[in-house]
Image 1 (cartoon, rainbow over the protein chains, first blue to last red):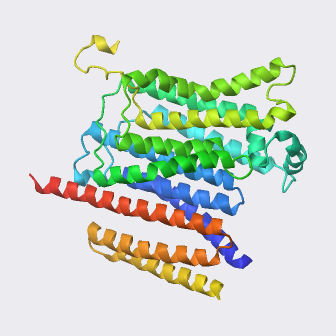
Image 2 (image 1 turned 120 degrees about the vertical axis):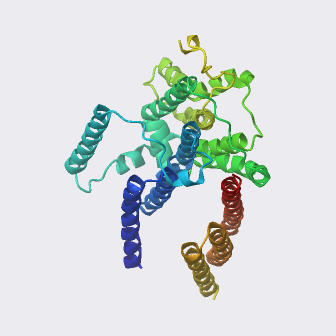
Length: 329
Length: 97
């Protein structure tokens, strides 16, 4: 039995490497995205085999689902801009090369090389088969306020890192909104009646699953990022089936939702510090409600942010007029 | 007995998945391939789900498997339709001029 599983693991590992190579080598951009999504799913499976279901959930929901949707949307936009969207023969070709300067390619190569060298150095110098932090985390679990070690680490023991991850998402959506201001508007594709029926049927269930994944984070694999990604998928369904159309009046609410997670997270940290404790050193009796409050608000922020990243354009902002020169300033 | 039935059903299900994959690789055009893939995989999925239900230990697990079955069947049917719809639109595009 163990030998069969070992065989499976080795095949899975080879498959992941093969998919990564294929994704980089294939000429067709659409096939590249499909390869990337398959690569992500297989990586999620590998995380399951490594007994890390939390990472597997995050990889499947964010690394594969939401990122795949973002890549497909970008591809659609590229094809529209280059005018190859409705040419069937162009499906298997890249859009015209944008003539990347040599210096940019060289800089990218150097950066990637440095990252690889850094990772290799970290891997080689790491102690082999050490106990890690398992014992330390297990000792501190009673003070954490939750029953699932991964949630305890993410929201309590290293809450500062998690806060920074939420800040990164906030920075990303600000950057996307700013960049999109200078791009021409591209109409959303029409998905058809079957898709709209599918969306109506799936939406309520997806909302329940998203909230369940968040709630389950206290005792089992799950949590804010995974639940937020599922709820972001709900947002994508709403946007693509045109059940929800972003209106200019929603801009303030959207901005509020993006900031909500970071604001509540920092607010709690500062309040705890104001009470004479270290930042993120939750009072023992209040740890669970505080963690739930932070996770709930962060989930809402993540869902809104990821959906907004997919939608791209800030509602109510007119695309820059192409024919007037002063509009460019 | 139930275990045997479960494994047998799952084995039969994988046969249908293999048949669907062979169809995907061997059939001449996109619509035939979609036909093979959606039909065979739908049946394969049903058999694998029935097999895992036979092996499940609690009612909660059975319920979860049924929900997963429903969700995957629904989304794969919708995906098949979307791909066929897209392909048909493109075919009309290229035939029109």
